[in-house]
Image (cartoon, rainbow, N blue to C red; front, side, top):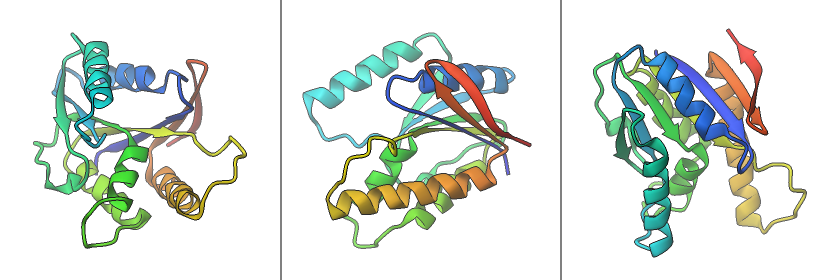
Length: 175
């Protein structure tokens, strides 16, 4: 199994930028993949977001893969570093897909771990969405519950967990 590093933070915290810099250090000149999990809804907003993200990564040496689910289908050679952006989108794609097969946090964990067995490093960006204090409808509450479960299970497996606050990385776990 490759090294698993979790990077968590709120919106605009700097977590993605930190994760990219971390991948640069970890890659040792080997290939770096940016694994985008946002579902393509065909909207103008989606296209603009993809353009913005690609521009932010321009010149950083990432090869972009777009895969909204079933990450275990991807092939790697064992020495790559993968930046998975992001876990929240991945879970959403599983839970709210048209697929007949229901999926839970365990299925998402298995999918992410399948990638970790094929690469040298996987850096997983996770959104901290648990602090707003808002009461949501049942389906959103279920989603947040599943997301919390995935976060805990991955943190248990991770070699390193970093929370980015105002652009400052705070190490929560390192083994």
